[in-house]
Picture 1 (cartoon, rainbow, N blue to C red):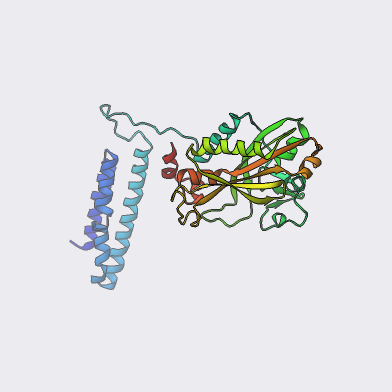
Picture 2: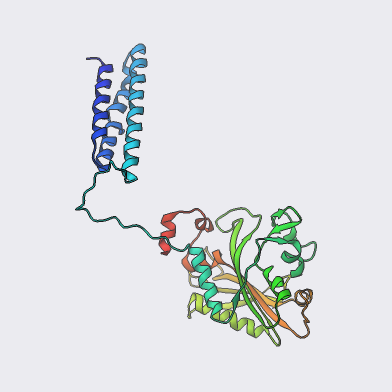
Length: 337
């Protein structure tokens, strides 16, 4: 019997057994047996070098043709069983297969938790458009015309002189124009910036901004509100500090740092050996912002704050790569069920 006859006999046997297999496990076993790395098809192909040139062409073509037919039939039968097709054998004595329930994405969980904390302090929720005017995204928030944030390297510009909002803060002047004091709002949502995608930055991320405006609001109100949030979100034993910074729309401006979760303040790579991690920015609303919205800054004062949702999630759950939130890795997401 020639090698060509051996291949033909192997093909006939394999096709028959695959066609009559009555379970997915049987098909997987046949796949391994006939098409596995040490299976007969691969063995024949590896030994082609021992044949003459004419035999090599004939046997090689026949073996590759056989492998293609077997793969096609296996894939078809396997797909039928996996989809619960009529060909699948039904055993009424086997236990049922449970279905996984969908869960809220970790970012939505964290955003909801942040909003719940502030809602408990009396803050309402407001939303704004993703595509903003230059005025609300920058001008109404006291950004000078030559501010670096207006540069196209940081901002996505769209037709009509509009931009994809770079923060959720533009909701603040919009609400200041529509409401009467006192105003106490948080503004959660998605934002966009023209940045390189790395372990710590992304072109699209989420923020929760908030502000309060009324008569006689002081920086003590701001500090008390933020300390209450930090303790509710991160735990009562949290250590924190306030640090001066600069934002165009607040004066004075402060950031809050908390002790590093990983090293507990001793210094490590995560906190750049400082022992502290920055979690949010805040400050007293700049008088120019109030004035542009039609409020008298001599009568009304207020504070504002903003934080990145991804950053809070990364800190709270010790996640070291922001890209994990967006790559739809089910194994990663199921950790937060």
